[in-house]
Length: 206
Image (tube, rainbow, N blue to C red):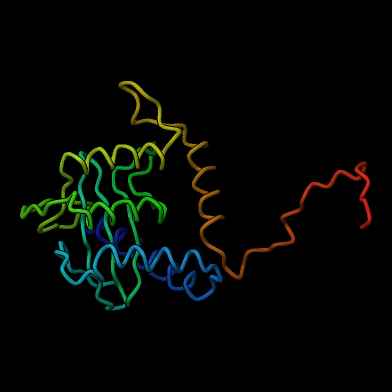
């Protein structure tokens, strides 16, 4: 079982890293590039950050994992081949332990780190079968930031004692919408997007 989980996790990291590489090559969005640069800048190019885990993909490509913890949430930043990938462990998505947060959400974590709202904990924790040696937690102000960020990232979460369970179909629709907005790949068929035109409205010539 342990080997199976390790294999699945490694496969996920490989897919995410490869997908990010394709997206980076194919994307023509200036704002996306600027946001990537901002995230790296807030993390100070990862130069002074503590690496919680060193790993190797099935293709023998090394990757580093930087971990942030907020209550039961784990946010993993995977650095491989100069690309960054983001994973949210124990996200409030029913039946889905691993999800992929938006860049806006990760930028919030990065800004919290740059502002000093995080602190390094030199403890060992096991996260999806990875032994994380050292991770970042949020201080009082950082926890306030994270609470607001989670509410923005997952606005469909139910409140009350069942707040950690959401409607899976609604979550899927929102995630698909975010992916469509943030990533443009060559395989996207623009002809499938048809605007609605009201033919009854006359067009005034100027």
